[in-house]
Length: 453
Image (cartoon, rainbow, N blue to C red):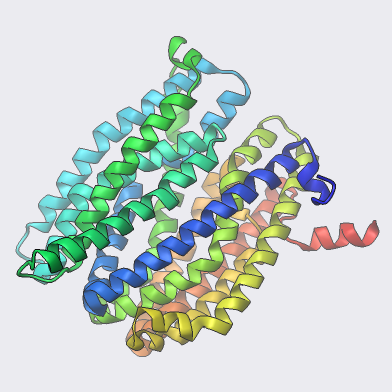
């Protein structure tokens, strides 16, 4: 044990973060590897046009999904962690039941409205895109929304490892097996009259989500203490909604900003360009798994420390987390720069034209990592309104820049817009955290502390 760094051996929240983040990091690595293989396989099976159609549909579906949960997926992490820390079982029971009610009301209402809108004759969609959207909205979107609520509850109970395993390696492995079986059995052995396209792929994605929903629900039943459901529920619906709605805005805006480039390319450029850009975006996301792993584990810990007013412990935790995020992101970015063209070629020889876009996206990711986990700090410390305003401004800037740059520069223009907006919101959130909470989220505080030791 002495061979491990000191903070791994500490018995406080810093040590807990280090140990559990390492586990989540390992799960994320496995998820990223399998997920990357999945995307390569899909691109190879269906070609660049259908691959672009599939990812365009997924972009729309994921944007809709965050509307379905009305912010409760993000709010549940904060509320579950806080109520559990204070043994407030009545409020915990109430917020869990409210999350279920929100899903039961919002999912059929919003999905029905969207599907009805798609039947209007004014849409000029190809047959493949139309079928992919209908299948995605009716099957995929509801299960993504329900799984998000379940995952957030597990994270609030510090069951981050199982939550990430179900949504990551397990989901990707099931999806991979379904794709291989469909290709080998249906389209080759049985010699189906049509080849695989985006509609088949998204239907298999829906079947995968059903499997993970069942697995996650069974695990959640083991995690929630019996005392929670034995205690009569109390409801603070107004407080929960006032917290959840800004979080919903943040979630929706963040997701839209992450997908708006794909959506706008789909409107302005042919489907093949969507596929090329998404491949570059997917590779760029390889360097994001370190911040994602730390942020997932960090969220409930920040909520607990902020609720109990332990500011010094919070600063120490944030500083060490920021250091880990930046170092791993910088190293991963360097590897992608060296191997970018080779990796893009795995999707197909025509995908290498996305290399300039990939390099530009990496710049934004490194700058964001340098600023630290500012978004999760604001959301877990009650400053969700400020975070929502910052991300909303960044989204507007992103849409304007995409509209101006995509027609002129294609997918490279989309990458420039995304990079610039990422840098914009990261720096604004950094300043906001410092002003509101007097926290330094960058690695520079760590370097200063080390130099004084």
